[in-house]
Length: 494
Image (cartoon, rainbow, N blue to C red; front, side, top):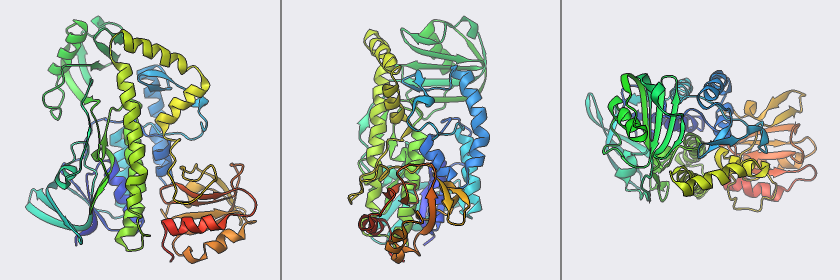
């Protein structure tokens, strides 16, 4: 075989999945049809969960470099640093239950550069101008047929991961069902040299849709006039026509710097795995970008899948481990499609939607409602069902970046201890029974004797490589029976 896993797509999700596979001991190969990474500014940030996942891999400093500038850009473009639900900019970071758990504002091309450098440090190859044209699989593996400048190639692997976007070739070739709903709106955004903008009405809601403006940038939201070819790039002429339909004002676009067009089409693969083929990111789910959830969702697919797939390839996965990928991530994706469809309904023009927007805006003034909508968007309410009775409040949830005092007296964070990508078991010095219960697995996970300094009610935790708390204990005698069940579920003994 050419690799353990062929990852199709060198966007952020594919790059992170390949890195997670390599950290877990697998040999990935990344293919991408493009000769160079795209400069298209699709997403402008990631949520707390994806940011924490990258910080756990030592990428926090690189993210922070872009975040401060991102805050300034967002305040300039939107007049607010607050998040939004259906363009109602009232999601207040200071009102959230865990305001210290923050995302990172970074344009997608910058994030791709960070992840590509991370992947290069792990010696994982990226083969560009490699376009998948056919796929075959059997019980022993999968083979992709690839068109390259040098001719057709056949590349074999134990598994293929489709991370190749909303129009995924892998998804189509493998025969995944992809049910969903048709678009109801189209957003067009253009940055360039535009004359006549001073004649446009004030940005905001118009009878025909929504208008957004900033120096050198215009954007419209329309609810008809969908492009015949959604894959074709947005032109200055198309942007001009959209503005005229909405406002009756003619502008001239002298030069185009960058463009973006998207709809709120919403589809989700019925399952994320068919045999030897798996999907992640937009290949598995597409939806409106309202609320900025898509990139965060895809990156968390990658960290959930990477260690499970690597363990399966190596023959050290407990029975059914790979099936938990769909079981855990599909409901999270479905929830994002649900709330983005709700946002699309609120964005429609007309008296009925306007009345509902007013009511939702008033609700967002209530702290508990603000937290509710914040949880919808930031993902911190994610909780996976565990197949054993783990009762601690953190069990099944993404672990925050704990501050730990090791038995040596040194203070570290969870991110400091998780850079290797291995499972981690932390326990207080007063709970030696935790380490004893995990003795048979100590070659399969890292164990740290430490005191948790910043979380009342938490003294021990078994944390999966994706940052999920698989088991946790309050101070006092630990429930080692459930810990043993958790270890059996997620890891094979060394």
